[in-house]
Length: 306
Image 1 (cartoon, rainbow, N blue to C red):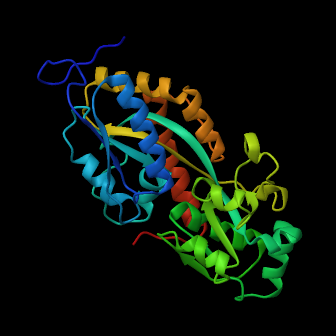
Image 2: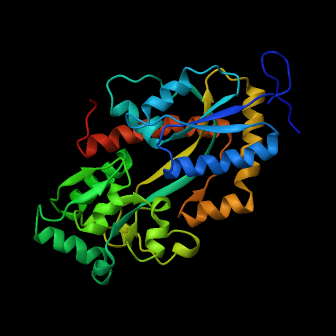
């Protein structure tokens, strides 16, 4: 087994590891990280805890991670929102997406879904968009973080609709959709699996380039209605820059083992996500290319730094 040593020379890990999640407790990122932390604890023989630091579109938690001691005992859940989009959303940040962190691995690619009520399932996405096109301003759309907001802008532009958009940061998104305050929602599938399976919500389509894996294979893509439409989010784990390379390699090796774990893999697939295997070097390079891509994407839909 690859050995790693902390600054004091003791074998790593010799104490508790903390995972910072820049999202609220109970959110899909929180659930994903808690399962990961549970698996990691069993492999390293030390306590692994999750600390939620939500706020400011993930930048508060990322800033806290950037300021942590680079000794391998602080790991952060990062995403396209925090590492690729944030520099083009805020004029000032508490961290530098490239210089403040070293990647353990990008671990997952996850598309969003377009949700509606079961009674609208019969008309499908094409019918719903046609209804919205004929009745501008009467069919509100809701969503969450920046990925959903970009998807909304893309949808309104490409489908030639003009509907109000409401940003949510809490579970009221689903409640308002079910209750009729919204007519469509943009969401991660992972947060609504039970509602979809209980037929309280209907999935019109996913934003992935190809259909989802496993039991979700019958869900169409938005691109089947609007050719060329595609945008997914990605996530993974990072440590503060300056963390010793042997520790990064150790955590990457354990991460790869967890990604191959049957339960972890199944639970990821059940949320419509695809597991990604990247080395630390590949992950760092990926972030460097994603920043410019998101800059162009955000500018193309009219989102400017604030």
